[in-house]
Length: 164
Length: 416
Image 1 (cartoon, helix red, strand yellow):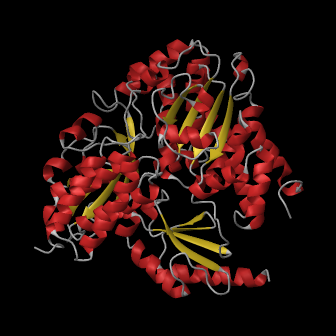
Image 2 (image 1 turned 90 degrees about the vertical axis):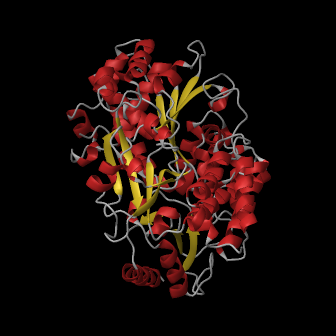
Image 3 (image 1 turned 120 degrees about the vertical axis):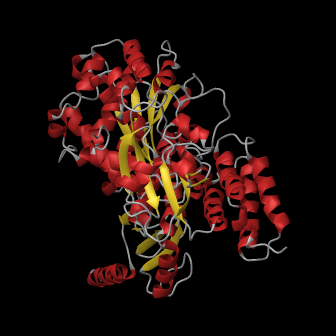
């Protein structure tokens, strides 16, 4: 599909275009919509956002590249970002992060062969009293340990298989 | 008593009816019956200072806005990204209307046409909740055209960032909101001036916690607020405690409470009873680190008292480290954060954080020399004060102050 002309996004795009003084201000919300549609910020999405805002695709791509929440390459179905910043690291987040990569058999930023899980570390997510924690597709999962994480991985695997 | 974290005392205060039943929007109603200048005078008299870290007097900031300019804005800094900070999140999750009310009072005081709440991208669900709050308010004429029949019009919008610490810096935040790279601007003009704010219009940028204090000030009066805290630091503050304590979390206490009271009485003392406290970062990764001596523990948490022990209270993101923690490792952790978050605009910060990280890694690997320790101190001192925004200073702090207070932690790693 596309985002332009897609009824799924029409109202949201309208709302974002209406809320700012300039069209350009809507570049960040529209990039999120492109990422939602394509799973990552690909050249089709960049081109459509540029077209909607009367910008050059290069200008849109520079925004996508600057901010870490826009992914410029495909990720696993579950994008796991472990906070390893100082407060979390004081509560064992580095050890947890290394264990998780080991458990899934991936290197930093890598994706499992079945395409399900991408693991990487991120900077402070404002959940320092609930360490170790991660965000899975931008949803916080807090107060983790190895047991709890194994159960979550199993749950996500069965969810993914269930949906075929 | 909670002024800010009222979600802990009043169940369902995130529902509009409940918020109103507990005095919600009384501050806005009272403000709308006053002149904008009178509202600014009350906030000035309260002694409220910015809770984002800098501690600038809030009413004074509002008074910088030129009233004759036809278009003005309020932007709420909800980018909460300082290492160790998680207070604005709780305010917005559990007591969202109080932030919106405070923002609207600010907007009325400067006669702004709109409020933009800039949230860090990870707070998208908080953004959805705030959007729902704004729509609920619209039905009761608390936002939009002719608010409560006052003749004053103002819209409130949310905007999501996308993962960039630098967007908590006010001019980078404005660039980001305009759809440009989140990089700081050359000042002057300042945001409060024509040409320096959002869409080049005069703009107030305030932190979430700052604005969440305003409804109380308008309802209860400046004196009631000033009665809490110390001479130069009025009101309550939310202290975010993380690291090696038994009960990490947010604690809302009057400014001027001692570190000892916070860390022992509230947060339960050291995580492990046999491992005493060693050091504290009282303002996240960006403020100077201090050893947790008795003198420091007995210091009052206020803007003026923290200056006396060589640090700042800042955003009060208090990270605690016990005796097992190697301060060279801490310097490395914090440096990696700033290296990642440097926006790349100013050479001293972009290059400085890169080289600091490289040399500290070498020291931690056991391949460093005593000269390397001097070298990183020298690089850090040359970064401070040489960049467009404070990130350059923030990145220098962890190096300069860990070496100053804990030289042995570095010496143990280096070859003689």
